[in-house]
Amino acid sequence: MAKSPLDDTPLVESPLTKRVAAFLAALASHASPATVAAYRHDLSALCTFAQRREVTDPSALDTPLLRAFLGSERSRGLAPRSLARRRAALSRFADYLVKQGVLADNPVGLLRTPKQPSHLPRPMDVDALARFLDTPHDETPLSVRDQAILELFYSSGLRLAELAALDLGDLQNSRVRVTGKGGKPRQVPVGRRAQQALAEWLGCRSALAPMGEQALFVGQRGTRLGHRAIQKRLAQLSLSRGLPEHLHPHRLRHSFASHLLESSQDLRAVQELLGHANLSTTQIYTRLDWQHLATSYDAAHPRAKRGPSPRSKP
Image 1 (tube, rainbow, N blue to C red):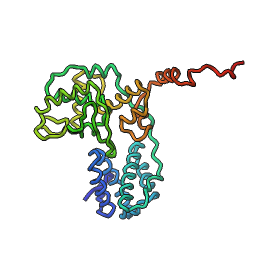
Image 2: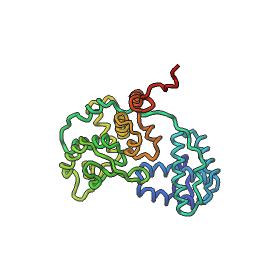
Image 3: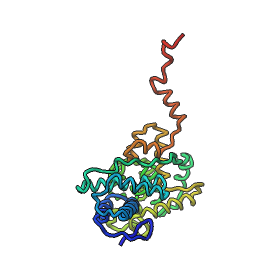
Image 4: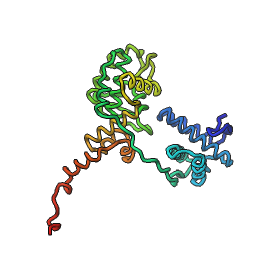
């Protein structure tokens, strides 16, 4: 019997908990393990709240009940980011219930998303990152693999889950096919340096990977490299290569987006490459050199280049 994430109260099996279990099983077929685990925690909290209110039928999930649930979570001191994730889990679950014919519509649509604190992630300095990537290694299969991972992260702006899930068949010449959030596929270009690093890795991959293994990146045991293993390797490489700051996969993704945007000023293209559904998300993930953009605007925009209107002259 499951327990509440809030205390040791056992969750009683009910039509609601059964629907939650079925939803999570369906979600696991295309979402990352981290997403499934997070949603399991969020929906377990919902089931506990509903159980205390003697609500066991998923068809009883309406806007007032869900608003009361999020309000109780806020009162417990949950941060805005955690509350936003709670709401996202509720919405995905409600969508599932609508498709199953349990609900007529999604009651979460009437709930306001908690306001997030505005902050911009700090990308790495271009020159420092270049020196880091160009640091020589010992050319062992593991080192060649790590170099390919680094280059691909920075070249294509992949999420950790997207890179870890790559199979050999996902590589297509100068591009790679990935499955993003919500199971949405996209194709992104692979830069020349990343192509070279991947070619070197494929040349020695058989030293680690057994015949028939489809995972692109494998560990010493020849099986797919997991999320935690990739994170640890990046942290170790940042130390061994003398990087004066912590390196994690999302930091490389931030840097990819910011450096590309500073060069191209094409926010829509960067949005497509990152696989963001909303342009506002792309803006949060990037740091703009506003002075550079303002100079480009002054030089390029028709209304910025023209002199004052004749009517403005005295």
